[in-house]
Image (cartoon, rainbow, N blue to C red; front, top):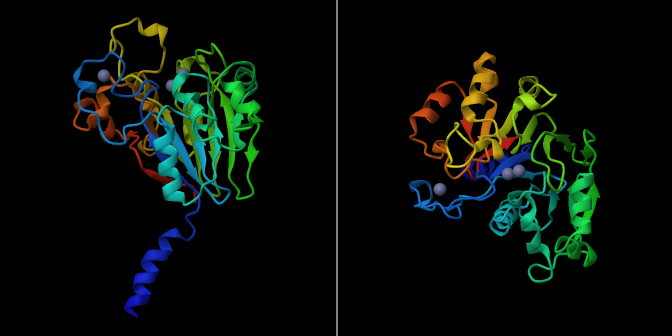
Length: 294
Ligand SMILES: [Zn+2]
Ligand SMILES: [Zn+2]
Ligand SMILES: [Zn+2]
């Protein structure tokens, strides 16, 4: 009898919990310690403090959104928790924190075999036309799968991912976020966007439509870094909080800020500004945190 109870508690949590999102990193592209930063924010490196990436645990095999410079640790972690050596990668755009990790799949490193990499047309062209990325294709370390804006990629497990184009500094590629549709729940992942007001989609409508919204929280407020911040536009968390003020608390509770710059004070749990936002319902991504899609 006792054995049966133990069996129940060990096994039951895994039954019917086959689609899960997992936070594999929370930081902006440059990570922390950040090149050149001598401030307190980068003085004490934290364990598993990786660049923003979302993992999906699914019957169709593990999926990674974005290949960051912490790609090795992140894929190792995903492999360990999914007990699967498979991998599919969906890319958002050609900024260093979102695709540069692909290099670990090349001949000098893993020498991988045809890892599916899903990318938008300009992103695919960029990878195909430029070294060192085109060598990954020539050696068939990766195989490119073409995405189109607003067209879902459906997996037999019932999972689908739909790229949604967003306004961002598109030097080499377009930029997308992903709508992730699970068996029962939906999520949106938008690590980078210039400003909500530049988008034809009303983010508040989108938040209403999903269960989880992982949104660009790069900077807390204007003046945070000593450079003209209009060069690197993002919705400040303070701006987003004002925009989402009109939503009921329950809706605000779906919002999880991610892609935090090294300088962002919300990285500290005890920061008063963060506590205030948490009282209003907002959340902040944490490495290893899971969100069920069942
Ligand atoms: Zn980024
Ligand atoms: Zn720093
Ligand atoms: Zn970017």
